[in-house]
Image 1: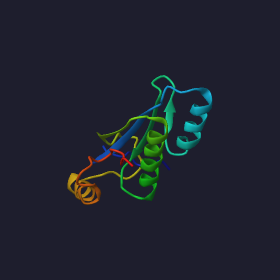
Image 2 (image 1 turned 180 degrees about the vertical axis):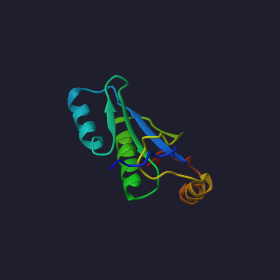
Image 3 (image 1 turned 180 degrees about the horizontal axis):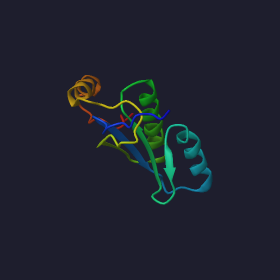
Image 4 (image 1 turned 90 degrees about the vertical axis):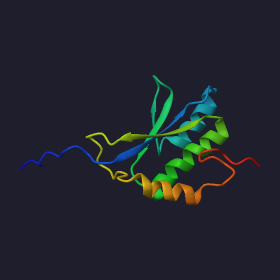
Length: 119
């Protein structure tokens, strides 16, 4: 028995990426240990990349790990909404308004979303 083919995916997902900092081997190993559980690394582009389709505990873990790496190693984290590819098997964001409401409610008024707080 074969599975019925799926049609195009509805909705979108977030591609979260961070460029690996130009660091020595020991620091890269520390970065690898921090990020390898939540993101894939492409040596050709030196990018760590993860995808999320819903704001759940796993998504928050991914975001926190990438922002921890950013704070520790000076990397820049980028969030980019993309159409869910046909091979995507996870959940998708179907409506921008739900995510926008969460982001607005949780973000600091004086700090853009994604900017790390200064001590």
